[in-house]
Length: 216
Image (cartoon, rainbow, N blue to C red; front, side, top):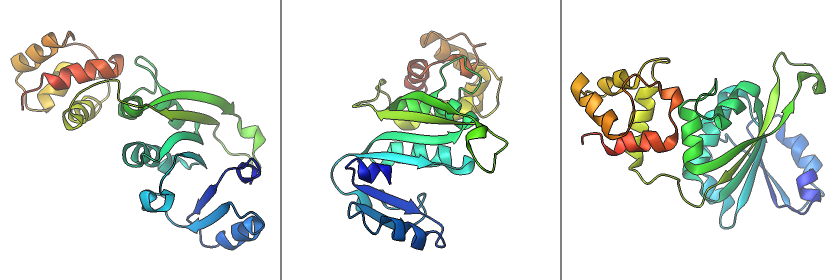
């Protein structure tokens, strides 16, 4: 309830019905807090948030973190900042840069809409009972506009094909999209990319350049 104490309006979303009464009891004396029993992945955020800008604060489980963050980035413009605690590997995926171990499609989808940073590391020793994993706090700030001007469908089609199989070349990625070897090489040459390049080496602007040159 520290957020409410700091003057924030808080929408507390909890999927577990058994926990809601306890949350409502704690929040009873705080008129700025509304407790909502709902599945965050199925919530109509536009209806619940209304106008204004919001910050998304959460401790997210492993299987929910990436889809929920990416879904709200793409579909909930009322949220302009995310401060989330997630498993270390998940957080590193969201903030990763080309060449990093965890860089992939989720990193690019994040970079398309937000600036991302690792706010702090959270060791397992601060929890009880102690988990077997470490966590991190990640901060995302929504960009006013995407850093690349490209058709989204084409961009994610190329990105998803590129990361469908790790450690494959960009030539192979474009062949999976139906291009013959010569056609794949031509598209990559126009985008300034070597056919032997790996997807994990390329940044968002490079993927956009490839997508722009893909045949319709």
